[in-house]
Image (cartoon, rainbow over all chains, first blue to last red; front, side, top):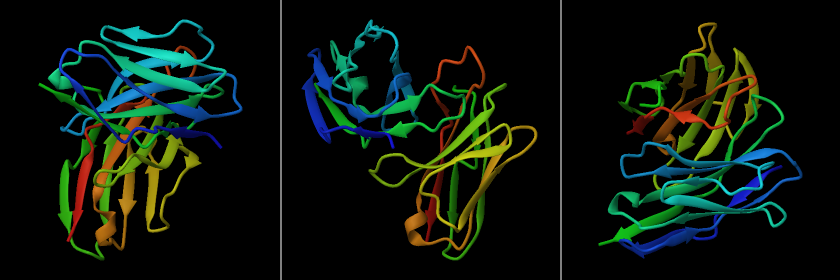
Length: 116
Length: 115
């Protein structure tokens, strides 16, 4: 069974600085998706970034980028120029790519606080 | 706006009661997922439906049941409620077939409080 681990329960970063959130996963699959979701205090779940495992290039979305290391089964999220609005819980998630109806496995989350 | 609609947004009830949470997925999405998030906890996968059929089951209690109807909306039924069932219940949907990008689109959640 697939598992997702986030080893940092809480992190903090100064506004405008850069922070990296860690995620590791365990799977025997070769094709899969990885995601980072953000959950601000409003509790809404918001997709931050997506990575397909067959793509070697790391995904980027504005200030958010990932470091995807397939062999190491690592998928870290880098947030550059941190803003107060980045304060949220961040969840790493995994999904097999085999079918269109596989479940999505979430990690336990990392609570990020951006300090003014 | 994700396009996923959940009702009710808030619900307060007593122990032993039964409630139904409703979810309307994004237009055209065939998969519906239900997750439970207790206070300061992660997302616990409950159950998934694809085009009306149950496809995957997580740590869903026997007191809980769900279904997906022909119009693709889904309902999560929670019965014999206990204090520990108080949580935020998320519904999410996802496209099916080729061309989908994989991610789940979440509703705003239904916050259940059991007193």
